[in-house]
Image (cartoon, rainbow, N blue to C red; front, top):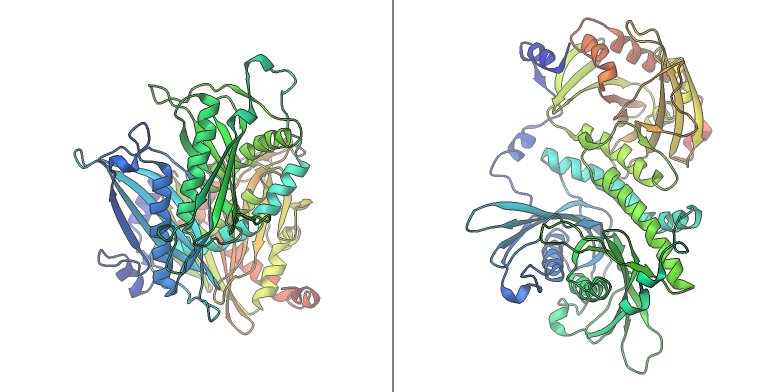
Length: 586
């Protein structure tokens, strides 16, 4: 039965919405609802805002983005806030003079003293009424009060979109906190290929010719009411020197396409002198990476300079057809120049991983993504965030209920998903630990013939080789290479999570003995419902290989789902006393 046929089956069934969806959620979806932290800014692009091509300067756009996001953060915090970091920004479109820039920002989630702010930038042509998405950004702001420590109130998500962003924000925060170490480890362990020795040096531009140094005096208009320099102003100055460095390589007017995730290492105040340094680290075929460093000092006699920020920006040169043009090669200086050259190649690989693993939509991802040490952080992030986004959907339909086990379904785009739920009289942390180890799954799931631990990546991530019996009339058993990522709750009321998705490993290629299966998004969530009482939920986004099996169970023609889930309950009850020492680590 295909998805269209299944849709007709569901349309004739009596459907009931999930009981967890409240009336306030329905009100939230109405036209009258607006997030209390949402701030909007609209700016008409004037000639004074543009560059040589008559397009809005990215530096000016960054100032507007930062100001809008800061106002949203301060609306939630009720006190002054400063920019702590900015995630990757990909600029999809330029904005011309005379067009309008519409910026919308809202707090996705508040932690102890920091909060994640989501920003969306749209350009509008007043004559044609057309609109284009320019970029999306995520910024972290820290609440700052001079006389007392700030403890932020939690945000309360109401719409499906807010619930999704709130849930995934915790995973993004986890990735930011390990970002610096991740980059350091990758650069230390990756073998970076380069062709410096084989290139024709007569057609190369010395990197030193692109070096730029500029100083800026921080004045009151550059700072907030507490005297701290606006993060957007610093980013604008950085973009300026980076553009000059890029222009010296290409002898043209470059276009900024990407700003890599960066952190502000410390504040600067009115009266500071900021020294901005930029240089082209590497030039690829159609793009170049420019590194920018910002240092601050107070008086001219000072010898010590404070490191404020470093960032990496990617530029291209667009031709008359708006296509990237070929760039000249760069010849790095021996020593640090060659180090920056090689590191730029590694960062390009990492940027691509982040863009196509972290930023892309679930439907745009291949089912199995190659796993290697350079993308393990981002695959783990995608694994957990995909499951959390599936959980946050508010249009789950209760399809059937049997023996205190509920089966929900969700039809969306090209995917059919199902969700099973039950209450088990076991401690939540115990249930989480018991089901975290996939090697024990054959004890309760007859669809798993054997499970082998291939690699324990870290404390929270492991890769398994799973062998399942043949399904239906298929003569071959199936095997899967599964990345299992587990997460403990960040806040009270949040679930424990075990996320599962397929990856590919060069050491475990497909063999004639098995038919290689794939899972794009599945896993468990565990909610504490009381003392020794846990709500166990299993989610699965069906892939074509198991769709017929799933629809057979969903439409009531088979009871295997219920039988397997009840076997899981018995497994948890029978083994709940086995993990007392392990629970002390949770």
